[in-house]
Length: 421
Image (cartoon, rainbow, N blue to C red; front, top):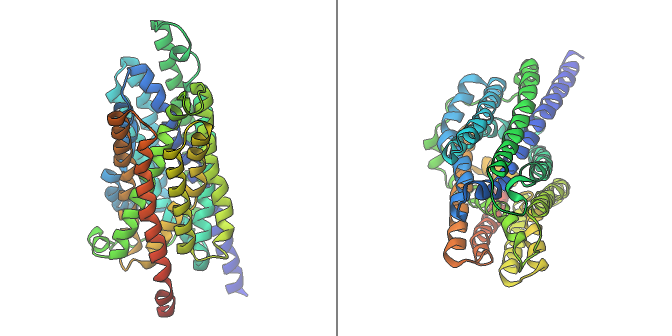
């Protein structure tokens, strides 16, 4: 009887901890997606080229490449709950740096602020992804991680919509000559957006700190001995890292280019605010896909489903590069639907197949998120070199083809793994 009661308490603790962790997924999704709307804002304010404006994503996602390994070490030393609270504090510091950037009107400081915010999110990723997968029965790990990522997608839907109506209205986005008053107004809207984000994160940090015992008690044991060298010596860890690198790079490239792409006369010819609002549909497609994918994963092998979704995304990129007018715009937006399950499925498939400790593999996978810094620069370089955002969609197309190969390879490797278990 005592054992039964203990199991019930443990189950309730895991469920509650999973709920708190899922809120974190929502928050960092919203914060990350604001960058898609920030790009056209800073491009207008600081008179930047496409490549220069995409440095916002470079600064943000480069944090994953630099900070993931230190984050994994911190996770082993501090544990899940303290690491999460520290991550939220770092994010608040980054948000508070943004008003400094607007006060002195220096783009470089804005990039530093984004790097700091992303450093906090990196620690969240390293701690929360394996935690979400582990909080419950092992056979439902894909289900839980995709469910958490569904709430991450909800954040990415709301973030661009609110940011578009905050950053892309009034000021420099009004008709007429550029004036000091317009510049000051547009800069003040950036302060407002990041001040609000900081306030929300502070509230969440306080809540997580108060519930730290619950989260830590339900957390899986952290493997302190995990080494990045162990992950680098495993072929599945490396293949999974490549897939994550290309997925994040492709997704960020399309999301970052979306506002300026939809504004074009030969696409939808709409205003910046309207285009920014439509970015929500790109991320909304990912949310719908994750909701559907959560249940599809209960019926189909994860690797097969990943391969099929990646092929669908590749075909849509091909359609964008071949079409013009609203059809091209809708095709670009629809890629989000197929992006949906990619990150959580690549992550969990890699953790399952890697012979390295999960902490080491998780750290390597989070390093690979640096693809969000590098692939968009390649995308932007194609735009600046050719003058065509249509041709640039061949960059994510190539990324999705490699991801499809990973998915089908993981599916083929599934049978012997299950036999061994």
